[in-house]
Image (cartoon, rainbow, N blue to C red; front, side):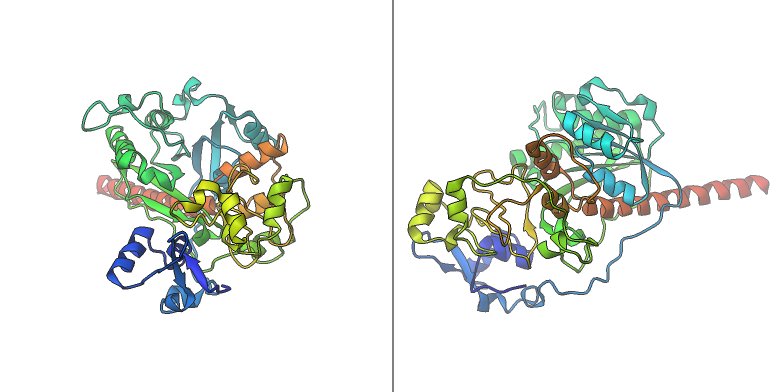
Length: 424
C-alpha cells in the first residue's frame, strides 16, 4: 500500500474495516481524532494516526493462506434468476455446480449468455410470465440478484402476498415452486437500511413463511474474494427448514489484489488485458481529470476548480472520494458503475485520461477474457457493471458445495442406518 499524508473518513473506514459511525464515535471519545479541513470542515486523518493500527501497517502484502475450494460429491444443479451477463453463473460453474436454467429479461444479456454458453437453457423474458414447476425438487439451489423495492405493509409481519408486484415476490414465488435445499439472494449493501431495515425484515419473514430459515445476513467485500475491486454485496441465504445443516459463508482471503493484478499478467490472469473498445470523456471532463494524479480525486484540483467542478456538493458533508477519481495501479478499483463516464463517479485509468475499456471493465469484474459481451459498447458496460464478480461467485459457489456435501453425507448416513436397522 502506498501511503499518503491524509485520508478521508471513507478511506479510513475501508482500511480499518470500521463503519463511519464508529470512526465518528472514536473522534468524539478521543480514541482516533480527526483533523478538520478549514473550508469544508470534513473529517480527515493523518498518516501518523493510522500507523498505530496493524491493518494499516500490514497493507496488502499478506500471503494468502485461505482456501475455500471443495469438490462436489454429487452433481449439483442451480436455477438462476435475474442472471444478467452471467457473472454469478460463471462462478457457480467454476465451483462445479451445473446451471440448469437462467432467467433474464434484458435481451442483450440473454444474447451474451447464449453466445458464450450455447448449452445453457436461457429463459428470456419477464420472470412474471414463467412458471418453474418443472424444476420442483430437481435443483438443489436457486439464486437471484433481485432489485431492492419497497413493499406494501399489511401488518406487523409481512407475508408473501404483501410483496406482490415486486421482484422479490417473484424470487420467493420461484423458491416456493422449486423447493430447493438452499436459496441465495444477493443485493446492494443499501438493502440493510432500505425503508429503515423494514424491507429486509419483510424478505426474511416471507422466506420464513414459505419454509426457509435465513442465515444471519452478511455483506461480503469483493476484495476479500480475489476480486480487484472495492465492491460490496449483501448475501441473503435461506436454508429449507427440514434441513439441519449449517451454512457457512466463504472465508475471506488474506491477499488483496489491485488494479495491476487485474490489467497485467500475474496471479489473476496469464496475460495483459486484451485491447478493446471503450468510451471517452467529454472534453471538459478530460481537462479536469488531466490534473488528477493516480489515486487522486477532486481534492487534488486547485481550490477554484474544486468549487466549479463540485458545485453545491463542495459545501456538503462527506468525502465524495469517487468523484473525479483516477485509480492507482497499486490499489483495487472502486466499485464499477454501469456507465464509466457518468457524472461524478469517474473511474479513470491510472496512466491515460480515459475510462476503462470494455475488456478492462470485464477484468476488474474477473470475467474470463474469452467471455464475449453482446450489444453496443454502452450495453456491454451496463452488463458488466451490473454483474456479480465471477471470482466472488465462485467463492460463494464453494460454500454452497460444502453445504450440499454435508447435507448429502448426513442423508446417506441416515439411510444406511435405516437399512442396517431393517436388516437386523
